Length: 185
Image (cartoon, rainbow, N blue to C red; front, side, top):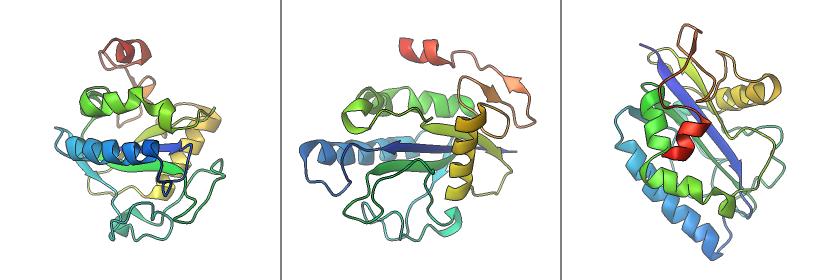
């Protein structure tokens, strides 16, 4: 049975190494969000660096998730002191569990604060695609899909909650998923 890959990407207002209260707050909330998401029904796995160091993204060993990569529009630093991004790569069983995890609970609370931490941009901040059972998506896969979504819009190759597809490429609409529904939660 195919699994759903999710890549997220955002440019932070300040580097991860910044000791300011907002940066510390982002880390604290982020760690709690990851713990909650990992216990959520439908969650399968996420990319984690082997060494687990905060802010070490470009030089980290990501194992089967591949070499770390970012979209072409990311123009900030790439060292531990200057990196100003937050990104995730994860696997889910289906759209509904991913939607419920993203738009409820602690993650929803963090989403409500996103403009405190992240720059606004004209680029998408997440993308989904289907992978075969046993396939681990790579960072490069996520970047490629996000750039495809930005350049060409939703397609079976790269899509959003609102414009989603089944594993066989058929457009689908899951009840309660979409921008208007997400705002009412």
